[in-house]
Image 1 (cartoon, helix red, strand yellow):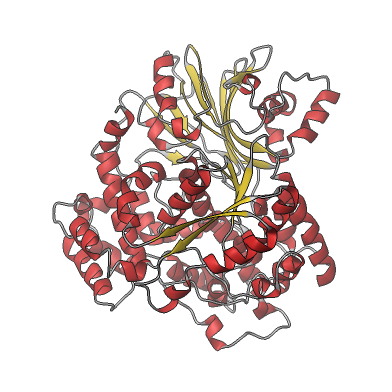
Image 2 (cartoon, one colour; image 1 turned 90 degrees about the horizontal axis):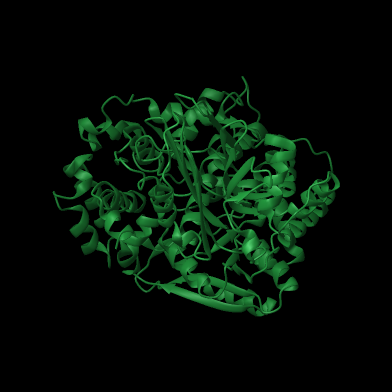
Length: 634
């Protein structure tokens, strides 16, 4: 796992090796084990290495083929690279290392872009073709590893993190009003935009090719996409057996490493089953749990600490368990560092992720995570039930859109922003972006199954994408590689075809637990239920005690609703109720004040909005006001 960076002057101007070095050095945290730079006239690639497979110098990057035709800077892990290597050896290729990097490099030389869909793993890389004078940027199927790019004055800049782009001479930071509108609608960005004006994220499952002489960049090309369609006809027992086989295969594949592998262990089913399998392969597996001090929590938040359930599983599987316990105030001290590393603001409160990654990094370089199980197997029933009986696609999209406006609904957005902040942004932009995620996948009439599958597709493309960005940035902040076994190609391909009736109680033969299980909750906590992931629950009974596979859905969140009107209230007031705060270049002070007072008084839970306001304030201080320069050049 590594960091990549580089530049390509399509007008033929020279690229300085010193520039590539500066762009790459700012990614030191992604790869403290090695560095490499390569430049030739108008193109340059940089690399920071976190050595996981083949720790020798043979894994040094950027890596070239023997004939010099191809050069690559690569970030990721290809779990099926041994099989690909055997294929390539049969075709006459010879290898100097045991790395997946060399397999990827020579695989592209043999198959070209056709290799992308054959890769089972997580990756983002830049590949230079010296004969075709073409640069190719590629990102994995699911978006586990990030890759950003921008095109300014005929210079294509790219990197694993945006802060690397800021090191290119003449780069100036501006705010994208379109991305700002998206973020304060969804607490996420569903398009390829970022808050940095002109900077794009290469979409998952896409590649971008740029040639010498190009005056503009074309659209990225898609080589893979999610496709939730019911095609399997096996009975439930056969489905469970195959799911079990693929899950075990996925976990074992992702244990491939020349360094020690650990695992996150929450009190939930997904991470618990991963730990069970990993512990069979590695004695005294190190596991990591994040808990919360709930002495000042109330309501549903009293259930947020899962340490007792995690400790039970650790004892059951004989793991070496480590825990971090967060309390009110821990968010405040970490915010500048967190936003510096996150940079691309996505989804909700992520400071617990920062702390648990920091803990794990003290003991291992690789950690397994349960991310992805909910999105594949319908883990959020209260979301899908909202639109279950809406057969008209327009009604379906509108209702789902209303739910996903997590921060500011359209009706309140203009009053919340200063007029200049969204100048030129159509009022319909957020809705248009939302609907655009579905493409042409919505038919004229939708069945209940099609409604759920459309929701699963949407959330895999948006919510899961946001979670993966956070996971990558905050683990790599501590030079830690996070692997996600649920996002194994074979497992994903199978999961997408499992009938909805095997995933979701409402479409199966089993009655709901009670009427409250489907009560919609807008802009608040997850709804506790065990309606979802039915077939996965049954498959994982092989690995976990019954009360873990039947437990109500639980999320990973701190008791911020309580802390934001209690222990952290003065911090929030000091930062956000100062009329000189940076956010008021874009937002109306009185509107923010009203929203804060609603939360402080207990009238409305505004924890998500408060988190985003705090994050955006620090984002402006660090990147717009230039505090990042002091961090980089200290």
